[in-house]
Length: 296
Image (cartoon, rainbow, N blue to C red; front, side):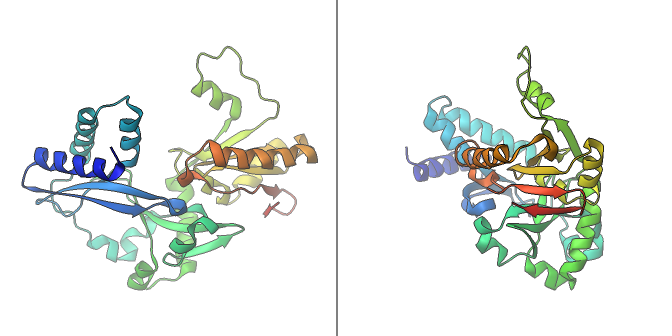
């Protein structure tokens, strides 16, 4: 079954099961790095918002033959029931900047891969990356959700990009607290049955507590300086994904090894992670003497 047919079948089956009081739609949504995903929404007449359930991964499961159509529809309905909002939500707070000021956070995305998006959202260039801004609404009825801030929001709020950045700079380290783990500990968590884990170089994994858009932690004020002081070294910053970066003490790396690392980044981006999660093909360097991040 082709993807378009799959979407039609799922939409009709969900419509039949949720009843006439709900409106079911399927539409394409632009995600990070220009990725387009097909999202299904189920909105009851008692609510003015609806969660988006992306169908692309479900189609891959169906195509693999491991999960049947009936099971997939049951899963989608369960996701809908668990995330459904059955009342009208007051969205007026989003029109008042002061009411959401302490919820402004930032994240990092690849500039070249998001050229079209960057025409519509406030952003700050950071080497080959861009800092963009979101409203964090990790509370009822939204759950852990974010709303990407567009230029039109700044016009409504009548606030400047500088104000937005300053608020995000203060809020993000508090709302999305950083976590640093040794790469060997991370591997042990992923492979608990492994008898021994040993990596040839001492890598640190930097992300936030939710492991979601944690690459932005490299922007946290004073954080890299504190880490470099602790390890007594400047650091290479390896963009593992939009969700995390790897920190490699510079004193442990020869120039030949650095070039090898850059090749590894390209290989991982091209073969191991989803397009939507790619952050960069570059390597960055934190110089503890100047307290600056440069691109290599």
